[in-house]
Image (cartoon, rainbow, N blue to C red; front, side):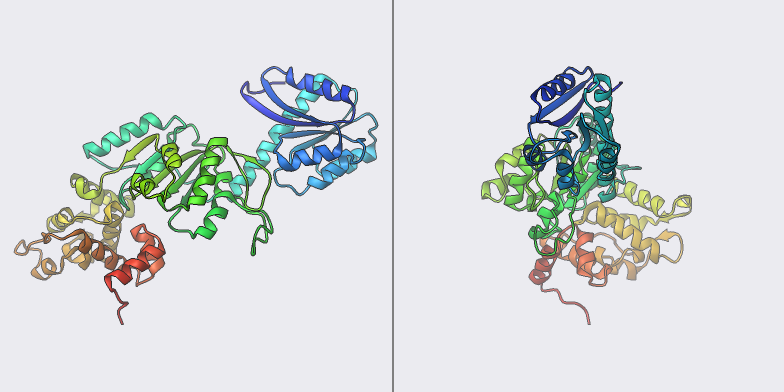
Length: 465
């Protein structure tokens, strides 16, 4: 039998004969190249209790235990989504019994006395079969794994420093906190971290903590069992379980409820969690990448974010500068977005000098995301393949420049504006572009629906007639 030297297999051995338990335990623990973590019990009731409390890769069950035999134990856990692969061991095997065991989902059937090499081979193959099954189930529930083609476009020295640090830490499993304003590219950085890590063949799953209600966030993260609460008609796999072996990206982690912060911290420290309504500890191994546009240290001081979780997630901090602090990237990004929008035709597209001056003089409260949306909108509205000031939209304050023409007589510069005015302009622009669809506007701005609703009321904005 060949197997990876770092493979760990958890095994439950249930047999009412002590000699058999000791023999199997000795064979498993003495295996070379594989570390078996063995739990032994002497009857079916103890086996069932162990299976309901812990997750095992393989269970070796004696068929003729008193009280509850091996078949009854398998029947009791047959519907458990994380049950182990079961191998029956008996000195009284018959064809009928073996057939019934296989119909219930047993992996194999061996008779006593157990032959060492056959037992080790069966346990290893059964563990591999369970891992394949578990991985398939996670992939079916996976919500995001599109990590190909990640590219961050920049010539800014500060951004280059961020990317150099990213490349150094990506191969490790250290937790990373990405900070920066909405729209600066925090999720893109998380995807790049995942692609450059040793986990890039496993899932990358993401959750925007500000975009889900507190009531749903726990189920999204940890999953739930059938009947755990009203409306839980089926079992749901949570993102922590889906991310096993891969990367979990929690955007706007500062909006995570305090109770969920405690559960997340426990999962990070113990590498185990429980689904909502469940009692079984499920093992998990994921790399956490978090992001926030809020000052987490201030939230810790206010008591709305756990200090122990904060220090657990910020081992490495990648701070992304806003677009207004990297003006040299505006032209580079605008042309990059045109290339993405019109692959193969980029050479035929251009941006007029006046329009580029407007782009470079705007403060971009929505950062790179807003620039992308402005370029995309302009490319759709232009009558030809040249983006002009008139194509950029009123949200950039370009009505005057548009009316005065593109001959250089007008000015494309913007008046000095305070942050409140810029924020209002960004909200108005997002609502205008989405036809006042608040859900789409919130997504465009990178904020939650609740936050957008609060800003609409605060600015006194009303839907146009």
